Length: 165
Image (cartoon, rainbow, N blue to C red; front, side):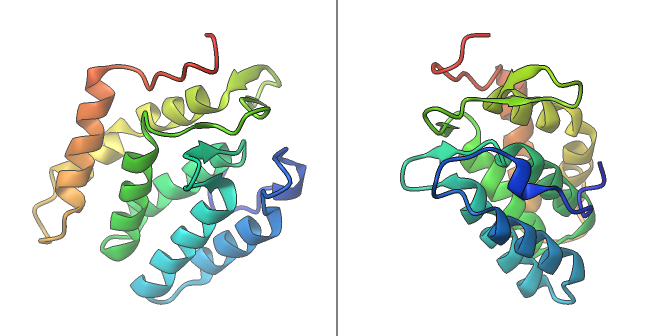
């Protein structure tokens, strides 16, 4: 799936406060953004739509949102990249699935834990993270943030006590 391709956000299950229209609008705005500030704001709006920062929970829509965040990290340096890396660092090991929404179907239609699916995508993008971690071309914190995320990958799995594997 191309991260900018419109996901059927409405078809993704979630609690009453999941906002599929806001997720779709944020991705559309991100794809059309002409400024780093606009792209960073769109990343923030996407994140707000697919989880609950106050409760530290992720809705199933966080899974397709991660593909968007990884595309931002790969393709949009500066503020958007920093915002996306910050989200993944915040989520890793600190967020759990929203109660009642711990599983989602993978591309093959099999049930998988939300955090497991998010972790798998991040692990599969390790080469992108290494590229950012090795990039000395700008003075932003993105390099260190990518290194921190790689260190989390090296330290083990994102354990989620609500889902048995």
